[in-house]
Length: 127
Image 1: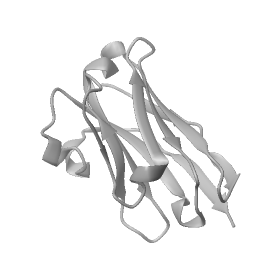
Image 2 (image 1 turned 120 degrees about the vertical axis):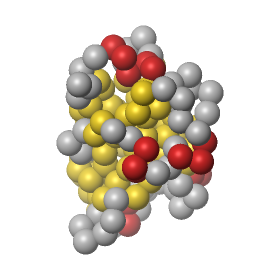
Image 3 (image 1 turned 30 degrees about the horizontal axis):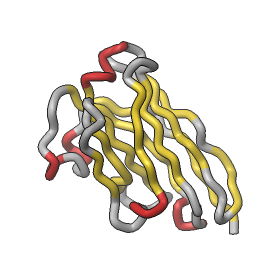
Image 4 (image 1 turned 90 degrees about the vertical axis):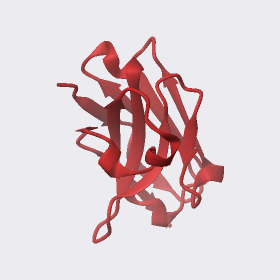
């Protein structure tokens, strides 16, 4: 069973940037579609970004797409999420999730698509 581990979260001032990383316990992450989701206190988990195994297709939430860049390094078995111009409302626990094989574009933003999840990394943006 694949284990996903997020890193890179922390406390940042509004307007700052963070780069989150998702690493896998097995080298098979290169064959996975990987998504990032976030959950703020008292709110439902919401989609942030995703990338196909090949890296040729990405998807972003409309509310953040001009401030995000998702990428992957299959040689290093990692997926990264660069976030810039962070706002206090971006404060949440950020999770990476994985699903083996090709995922239809319409399903890349659905949390039910993914069957492997990390424990999350806290991102706190101060005003």
